[in-house]
Length: 307
Image 1 (tube, rainbow, N blue to C red):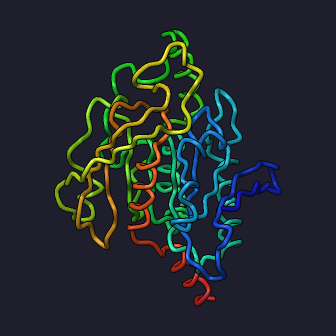
Image 2 (cartoon, one colour):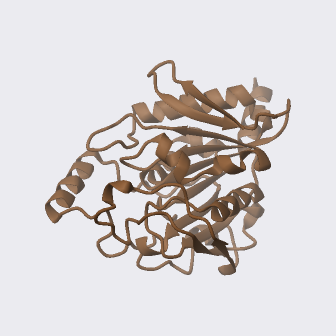
Image 3 (cartoon, rainbow, N blue to C red):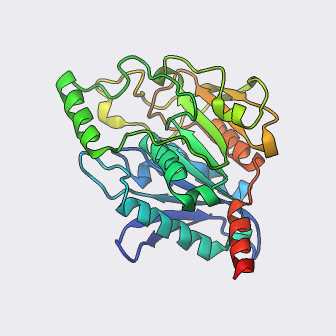
């Protein structure tokens, strides 16, 4: 693969850009815009969801940027971050060509998932072009999975209250209105993050999908690559421990309109920050590739015809 660092001319911000080294002229690719969670950075997110391990096999282009806002922690904020993400997407689309990007997906962990939701719900740029959203512990569309009791890092009550107040003032964790755009949706969560997983999905019902169907579990004998090591001396199940092998339950809602993929994935005995294991990472990529694409291409070609 090829790993580059691209620099935004306006802000000077850097972003990882990865793509197959042997990419042929006109060869179709799938573009993943991979957003980290609050308090994190692109380098951590790249290892948390190591899609780059399967980049050559599945012909992926992956952009993994970092947010600018650092108070009360590094997180994605409306305004400058939104403008940056549009510029970043446009630079990648311009480089590889809208006609060869078969599908365009947002991937987001935690607040990066919430940001993906907000972009799809409130910004027509993303609504018109994005084919799918892969939510990595970043919220579930239509019907939330309730958080586990005392979810979060093991802070004191005073520290937790102060952080919640700071986030409330910044409005970074407000849930956006339900999106009206059409796209595939895959929700991934750790078993210990949630109290329970709903058996139904309003998003699946929107597309006339069938009742939830459980697929064979995905079993990993190797651990993920990373975790939130700040809490190693006092880990909690809900926030996550050191990486370890594991298994994941995969549920799909079959026969959705236009072939859209709608799925829930529960990583057993995992919390919020354990990096994804290799086999479940690959399975998620395969699910992404099985979904329909083409929104970006159709929009750009339609605009060209219109002019």
